[in-house]
Image 1 (tube, rainbow over the protein chains, first blue to last red):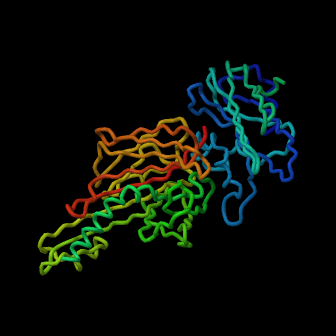
Image 2 (cartoon, rainbow over the protein chains, first blue to last red; image 1 turned 90 degrees about the vertical axis):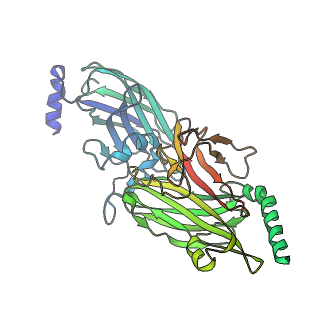
Image 3 (tube, rainbow over the protein chains, first blue to last red; image 1 turned 90 degrees about the horizontal axis):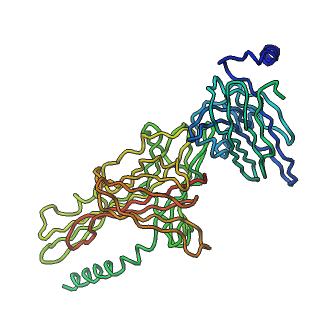
Length: 170
Length: 267
C-alpha cells in the first residue's frame, strides 16, 4: 500500500483526476497541566458557503469497548463543529480518515479529499481536549488539480500549525 | 350558602394569585442534549422555580412522564426521585436518533348545583365521568393541560418525534431542537389540538443561573401560520413557554400551557 503510494507520489506530475494525494502536518502543542489528555482532532474541507466537502482526518480514542463499538466515540460530540457538520452522519470508524489520538508534537499523515475538483475551499481544523479547551481554525485552500495554495492554519491554544500539502511536494 | 361563598372566595383568590403563580416556572433540564457513541445515559431534572434551572422552590411532579424515542417507541424512565426542591430521572438512549421527553398533566375542574348547593370537583379527565354528573344543573367544566418537555439526540438526529400529539398546546420544532446554534434562526410552530395556533404569545428566556443580573428574555407572537422565528443570542439552556385559552372555572373553557427546554450550542 505504502509502496504503491510512494510510486504514485513520484509520478505526481501525471496526477490526473483521481483522488488527490495530500498530506497533513498537525502540530499538537505540549500543555503543562497535572492531568493531560490527548485532544480529539478533526480536519476537513468545506466550500466557501460552508457546505461540507470531505473529511481529511479524525483522531479520537479508538480503543475497543467491552461489548461493542469503541469507548471513545462518546466524546466525539465535543468536536462540536465537526459533529454538527458531518460527524453525526457517519458510521465509525471511517477507513483512511479516523485514527487514534496523537501525543504532543508534529504529526505528518497522508490524507485524501477524494476526487476533488479544482476550486476554492475552506480548510477547517478543530481540536477538543478533556479538561481543556476547544479550538476551531478556518482558512482558505485553493486546489488547481495539482498544487495547493493556502491550506495553512495557525492555532493559538489547542493546536499549533496545521498545514496541508501535496504528497511529495515537501 | 356558606359553601358557595367560600368557593367564590377561593376563585377570587385563585384569579388574584394567578400572576404570582405564573412567576414560578416549570422546567425540565437534561444533563446533555447532543450525544455520541453507541448508547448513552441522560439525567433529567424537573422542578418549578423562579430562577430558571435553579432548583429553589418545589419539584415538578413526575406523574405524567411520556418518553418517545426514535421510531415513535415509548420508553420508561429509570431511577425516579422526587425530593424537596426537584425531581429527577434517568433515561438510557439505546439507539441513534431523537428522544422527546415530556411531563404531561391534564386536569378538569367542574362545578354544578345539587339540591341547591354548589358542588365542585377536580381531577383527571379519565376520572370525571364517575365523579361528575353529566346532566347536572349549572354544570361548568374547565380543562387544563400542561406540557413540559425537552429533546435529546444520540448520534444522527431523527424527526419522527417532532410531530404533534394532537391535544393541548405544543411548541413544535421545525428546525431540529438538537441542532440549535447561537446566532442562527430557528423556526417553531405553535400548535393547539393539532392545528396551528396563530397570535399566541411565546416567552423565550435564557437560563443564566442565579448570578446573572438581567438574563435575556423575549416575547414573541406566532404568525398566521402558527410559526415563530427565534434567534438565540448566545449559547446556553433556553426556556420557551406559551399559554393559550381561558382558565376561568366560573365560565368553563380550557387553558393549555407548553414549556420546552432547549440547548443552544456555540458556533
